[in-house]
Length: 419
Image 1 (spheres, rainbow, N blue to C red):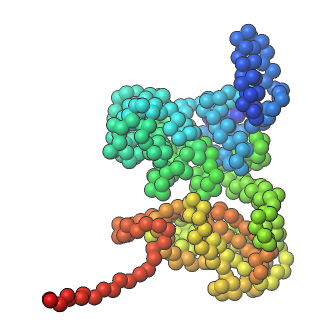
Image 2 (cartoon, helix red, strand yellow; image 1 turned 135 degrees about the horizontal axis):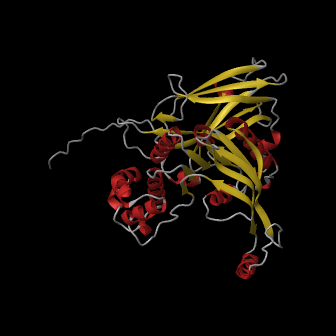
Image 3 (cartoon, rainbow, N blue to C red; image 1 turned 90 degrees about the vertical axis):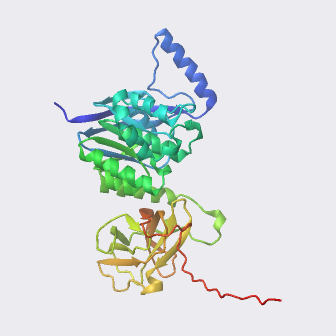
């Protein structure tokens, strides 16, 4: 018996760029289907393009697959075909086992029904019996964290509540294959941790997960193999590290093709990347040396990087920038302002940066770079490649914002004199 649970063979899907042509072709295709005529799906008509083009791969029992690529590469379209939401125009998809999907926020929910009613409806769609849903109902509600709103119509739910409820239902169904799109990005840090833990447990039980994400940290953590798509075609289908590396190469190439006419004399760093010095590995660790992406408020973050030099270069500078989850620049650091440049670096060397941050609870992204002392020549640049989560512990005060600002308060009592 074959251990292949997902087989995608030569699959293609075409879209139309204009609404007018979409409606016209739709009517024509329906008419041909009604009359039993040949659809001729293998040719492109005026205004059409291949969103997914001749894609093939297999997923074995127990494997977790990541689908990555730049925006418009065909990831979500492929995931929808795996879920049966749409059919391919060419090729074949074979899936063995019960499938559940989290593809769009609120997909499958009836807005006028309550959260309680939608749990039973969505659970039934995923193949759960009424008794099974009833037995797991409290767990689902607790996981979603919507106890106070369970009997409210879901049309009043926020996007985050939609995602939490949808994931909670799918996570408690007895699925063989779980399809997950970028919807988890809507949840907060605590919910993302719960989801990652749940998916990890799903994998350990020998189930299969297919994840579409731009979050390389999630891909590295959860996926045993990765397929990279670019303009609908497979660029790389290999192990996680090799495919993710190719993804960043494509990202840098695309960024290098842009021009920035509105920023005056500020150089486009992507056009300067030379790779004469480059990162070979980067790890985020806690103070015990354990690699992790989760830190407590006030905990020191150790950035451990390995570098390789292809040629002799004097005075290279290593630095980084921290961004919030919504892309706000929070601050940067570099070796020039601390210990000078890397003049002693030979063929390869290791660097450790100790970040004593005052970051508050949230999700953050770290950019790392190697450049010359002027900052105009960039040797390597990992733009927001490293995500980490800061969580509050039981002793944390309820601060708001991004940073805990140290301050003291003094006051003196003034006694008013009686008239």
